Amino acid sequence: MEQCDSLKEVAENMPAFFCAASAESGRILMLNKAAADLFGDIETIGEAGEGNTLLVSAGEKIEGRFEYNSNIRGQWYWISHYPVTWIDGEMAEVFVGIDYRRLKNFYSLSEEEAFAEALRGPINAVDRLEKHVNGYKNGTLDSFSVCYLDVNGVNSVNSAFGELEGDLYINTVIEVIKSSIRKSDIFIHIGSDDFLMIFPKCSYAVVENILTTVVKKLDVLNLENGQDSDYSVSYGILEVNDKSLADVDIIMSTIRQRMKTMKEENVYSRFYNPPDKFTISPVI
Image 1 (tube, rainbow, N blue to C red):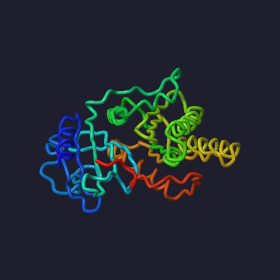
Image 2: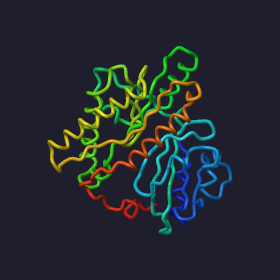
Image 3: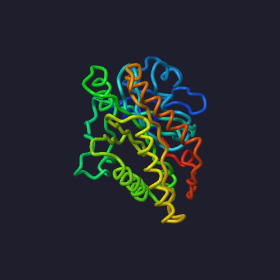
Image 4: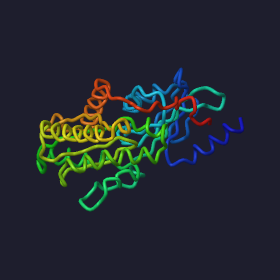
């Protein structure tokens, strides 16, 4: 009980909403005031997902920490999602959401900056996308394409060799992407191993060719390194060439789903077998 009271005190002082629920039943275990104000008097986590993308974004992942953007009640949040062992030993899921208005806006990368700087932390990728969407709507910007890219296998590398090696793994992929896109293209870190790219004045076909080049370059690295590396990516692309597509929610959900479909359909080898992160997650 003392642990629970201490956790409640910590949660109430967070600059974010805190929501914990049973992994099996979805029953709410704890809400701080910020979560209660946002979601109301809910009894299950499923009720929090009504009318927003919280649970849709969480998808089918059931292990390990992961992060994503979510539009809740018309405002964008940065969500960190943790499967954990609750106080009584019950398996639970914890959601911590920070209003993007509280986050510092990181800028996209220029010629002089190292692409690895994109890994400094979460940025408001949605704001950059909204600027392009609004520009296209009002006629100040031409059509453009957007890509959601996920670096495959990072969790496996982290589990086998540690996060430092995981960062080096991501940085290698980033350098390959850097060598394949234009200086005018926008490359933004969404979180974890996910990235958003905006390609001004580019068609779907052009961006597909760019990403195909990235994949081929990664294949060459894998061939050169033998079984010491398995670099690969999954991605989803959408060309915004009609005002019916000029909507951030439509764009994000479409490219994210296309990325997930590619990840499910493409078979890529994993040379590392990570432990079950759910069972060794921190006890709250």
